[in-house]
Image (tube, rainbow, N blue to C red; front, side):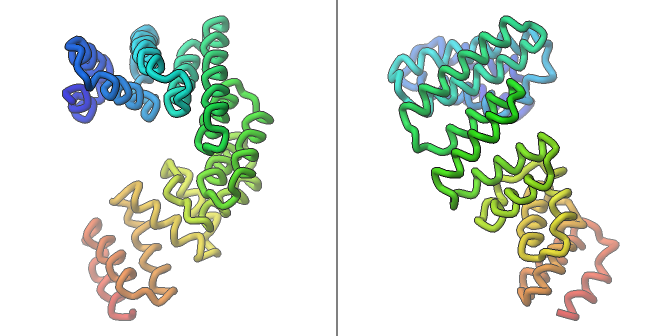
Length: 273
């Protein structure tokens, strides 16, 4: 718990690791859960290591891998644990991009763990997102796209698969394909999987003439940045156009709360609803 507090307070992964080492030194019945929590701090927030010297980041990753191996010893066919180990190895490989032998070694381990994870639960769609990320680390465009298209084939109504493929297309600078997949992602209700704010801003411009898609995009923008005045204003207009007066009013008031200079215009807008 103290390690999580340190992370929430400062994001200092060196101190976080020290706290976890201390807590795990007591050998309690909660150790397995604590090890999982530390691993997920890294797999869900790999950027927390980027500001560290490479050697220190590698030390933290090696410690996380050792914890994962202990947890995996409980059940070597646990699909989720195997996937998290694959993610750890993949992240670690990126910190050895100047050492070809180590890079390939860690990436090879990531692929092995990922294959075992999928074999243990072949119908679990999120495992294919992690597998695609490994191919992306290798720079293998064809395998990345192939893997995500296979994930879509398992359930074409699952929005996150379209979201993931769309984002990868943008990464590979294929915007037409990206917008096609993102459009399906939005239509299926998956806009909550879209980030960062820069991507949403690009999508808001692209879907400016498509209110059915623009509305959830602007709503997502306000979730990512509660102080995005422009997003609140555009959201208010879109709600008003659909006759959703109360939601239009609330969005407009939020814009005026952030920027008091908008108060008069917001009052006029609300009177016109």
